[in-house]
Every structure is written in C-alpha cells, then in structure tokens.
Image (cartoon, rainbow, N blue to C red; front, side, top):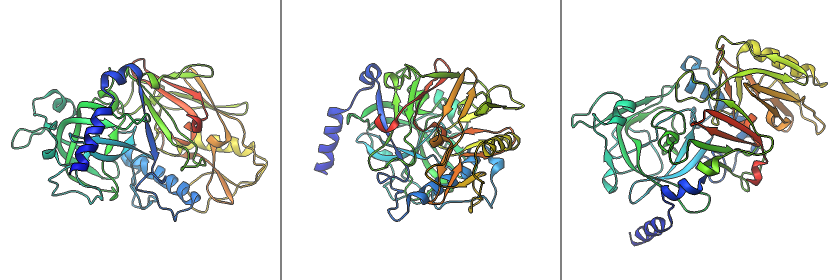
Length: 429
C-alpha cells in the first residue's frame, strides 16, 4: 500500500496540467497491438503471421462501420475482432487505475469495465472500482452529457445509462460518469484531464479478448477524447504510423495533440473533412486514384464524404467496380504474373523478389494529391508473397486504412475542418 501511495504522489507531482498541455502540446505513444509492449504480443508468432492477423482483423473491422458486412463465414483471428490496431496507456480515477486501452478513430465513447460487473466479459487486469476514486461522479439523467450521449434511459436511482454496440454484435452497457483521465506522454510527464466523460461498463460482452481493459474513442462525436479536448488542443491532433516492417522493439508510433499536432511545412497537402454521415467518422472526398499517368475516376453516388479515413483498419477498402479497375491498372503496370493469395484475403499478389517494382500510385482527394510509395501499396505477407493493400469492399462504402497512411504525418484540424498529409519518416519522429 505504501509503495502505491508513493507512486501516486510522484505521478501527481510530475503530471502536466491541462493548462500547461494547452500551451505546449503533448504526445502519447501508440502501441501496435502485437508489439512486445502489448498484452496481445505472442513471441512465438512470426512477423508474417502478425501481418496476416492484422489483415484478417481489417476485414472483421468492416462490421464496425457497416453491420451489413457481418457474416458467420467472415475470417476471424483469435483476438479482438473489430477493435483498432493501436493501444494507449491511460489511467482513470484518483488514485489512478491503469488501463491499456484500444485507440479507436472509428468510435467516440471512452469506456472500461467497472465494479460491480455481474455481466462482464473476462479480463486479465483488475476492473476499475469507482468506489476507490475520490474524483469519480455518476452523471445524472438530466445532465447535458447524458442528453447528448446517454442511451436516453435512467437507472432506478436516476443515474445516466449508456449503451454502445458494434457491428459484430459486441456491446457495452453501463453508467455514464466523469473522472480524472490521465494520459501517459512521451516526455514521461503524464497529462491529467479532470472531469472527463466516460462509460463505466457493467454489462459487456462480444468479441473482446481477456487482455482488453477499455476503449478510447478518438472519433468526431460529442463525447470522444478529441471533442472533450477540443478547446484545450485547439481542435488539432496528428499521428505518425511506422510501417509494419519497422522493428517493433525500436520504433513506436505517436499521436500528438495541440501544438504538437500541427502539420505544416514543405510537402504538406490538405483536404476538407466532409460534413456528411455520422459525426463519429472522419469522412473525406476521394476524386480519383492514378496508376502512373492513368487516372481512374472514383464514381460514387455520394459526391462528398465518400471515404472514411481510419487508423484502426489495416487495408484500404473500395467499391467492387472501382477496385476492379484499380487492380487491373496496377496489374497491367507490373511485368510479373500475379499469383493467388492462399488465404484468399487479398485481391492481387506476386511472388516476392528483391527487384519487385510497383507502379507510382497517387490518391486524389479533394484539393490534395497524396503520392504513395511501394511500402504504402504492397505488403509482404510471407517469404514468398507480396500483395496489394487495396481490397474489394462494399458498394458505395470505402475506408482509407492505416497501411497507406504509414510514413505520413497525418494531421486533423477539426476546428478548421481539414486533414493534412506530410511525407515523413515516422521511425525518426
């Protein structure tokens, strides 16, 4: 007990206040879910198996955005099916209770399982105990957060109830509350965020693994971490994702807030955030994709906001007709003969050789041309195979995944309504 008290005193002594963070900005490490720093890490799994697991999760994650994709035959990996690819170290309460939460740009609510939990999925880490936090407070049914983010129902003692569900039929139900949320920063000075709205789950189930302890929603909705930080970070955050082939022991990705989240300088291109669809999702307008000098127009019934940008989805999914045209153009530009993916996950694969050359591919967003490298467009899934990371998805439903975002500093300015891309060596950030 004495050791914990001393640790908490040290945390409070060196924590960065929200006022200080507002002036200087701050950055938080993003832990790739299968790195040695993650509870999901399995040292017996090869790098190629980790890549293949990420690809399968990517397909499963489609149900997060579009429940119609769900099928009993959908490929599954023995891990959390629909959550994101990166984790964040956070703490809730006073004294702080540590949580390794999944960072999810495709959802809003921050939530964790809480005591008492009669209908909870099994987790390895201790459940958060609200009774032990001096700063915890349940939200009332008539509070503004409850009206905007709650389920619209009240418990018998007039506490605000919430309910969230996901496309794969996972769910979390509980009480909406406020408490101090502490983010671990890359400067070793954690950032304390008092009175943060979060969900205290008492009835949760689905495809969650035992290692899961919570979710940090980074979407655009009212109760996401980004929205709750909006004024203090001036609506700005960014991330720099290291490539899959980078050493996970030596390189980590980062998410930056406030002044640290500004993306500027030579090579930056920006595109508007589209005000269409659910507020949770960050939607962009895709106009075309070029393979060399062959520009393929993106035909969509939706003129604006026709593609969601998401850091938690590995692959990039495009409508069948457009994806077919893109795959055909890429295949025609490569002299080697394509081969079949034995796992039937990816649409275009080749036998790997050191001299493999992919064509130049440029993604044309409204007002921004993003030039991709071979490491953005092809991924090595085994010693023998390298495959295209764009995949057939659903009609009029597209996701711009994280492989095409690696080695870019991707900046969001929700106040200005833009997303910016800057080519960057993320291993040096």
